[in-house]
Image (cartoon, rainbow, N blue to C red; front, side):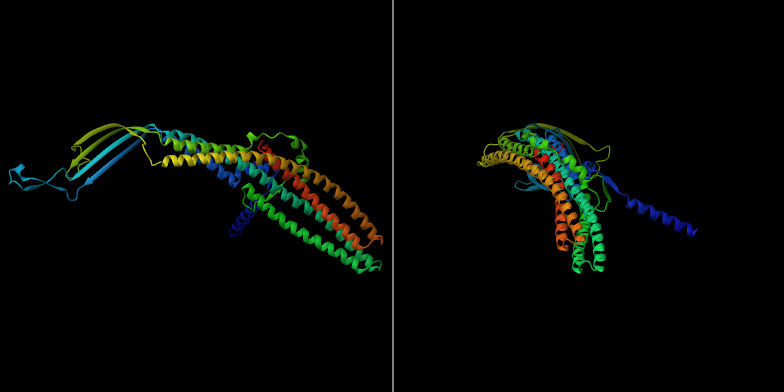
Amino acid sequence: MKKFYYILLFLFLVKNSIAQEKSVHFSMDEAINYAIKHNYHVKVAVNNVAAAKKRKWETTTMGLPQINAKIDYQNWLKQIVTLLPAEITGGAPGTFVPVKFGTKQNVNASITLTQLIFDGSYLVGLQSAKTYLKISNLAQEKTKISIKEAVINAYGNVLVAQKSIEILEKNKAILEKNVHDAKKIYENGFNEEEDVEQLQITLSTVNNQLHKIKRLKSIGLKMLNITLGNPIDTLLVLTDTLDSLIEKNVDLNLLTKDFKLKNHIDFRIATNDREGKRLLMRLEQSKALPRLSAFVNYGSAGNSNSFSFLQGSQKWYDSSLMGVSLNIPVFSSLRRSAKTAQAKIALENADILLEETKQKLNLAVASAKSDYQFAIEQYQTAKQNVALATRIEKKQRIKFFEGISTSFNLSQAQNQLYAQQQNYVQSMLEVIAKKIALENALNTSTK
């Protein structure tokens, strides 16, 4: 029986271990779609939109009928004594008789219906609530755009690390063979020990770089998990490669694409902000208008010297009241005028900032197009340079082992190749990053 429990425990642990090691596969597009639903900032933005909808309804209800009920219970621990002239009861003139009015305990219950008929502030408040909801929706859209760019950059950084590891491991394999062959030649007396040492230095440098890139890949995966909205230790498998992505991201048609300013998210945010400032000015102006409301009240009162209000014999006296209230602002010592003037200045500032936003967005498009074009040119140059550096390194390696070149020349050729390989990998990432930056500038990244 004990053995049976051990077997169950073992199977349970194995099952948990397999579950923990289960990996999640993502292409870049799948990662973007996943992040737009699960990213922490996106979840906050969704909640903000939900809160804005509730705030809009809260403002709307201020103009709808309001019903309030009220119950007051009073128990005089010691009733108030009132003095009446003694002459009323036949007493001597100039003297008073102490009397107590009413009962010791009282209950008053009432219900009141109020209805706002006109309030300029309420009308402006309704418009402001709609504008606030637009702000939240635009903020959510802006967040999704930012998250898409963040995922692309984080995903790309991991792919760069993977590509670098792949290149470094190939370089390491070649170097290990070079060191091995150089040692054999040295042992046979056909070269110097310095030649072997020079190659060993290069091999050690490549080894260190390989270890560093592997650590960077691990950190990059954690950063990607955070961007996706996952726990940082989630096992990710990226199904796209730099080579496959570079083919999708070299698109020269983007450089000639027209920029539609009014559709840009930042322009719409600035426009909505300007509308908010306009409504704020309207709100201050509306405070000079009268406020009209009506109410209907119904109540019932019970009186007793003991707590008999729950008994059927208790007498209740009903009352009802209807009224209209008109509040007319007359004079505020120019306070309303000062606040309206401040709101007008805020609106003027919003107009100025809106114009600045137009100019900045146009500049951003021009700059993003220039950066993207340069990234493509840099990638194409880096690709050519890698091919050239590879041929140079290969020639120097052949010359070295044939004894017609030095280890120093070979080391220079190898370092040049490694630098060009790194430039090439980085240029691939740069193309991907600059493309999404241009798409954001053109406001096409959400389509």
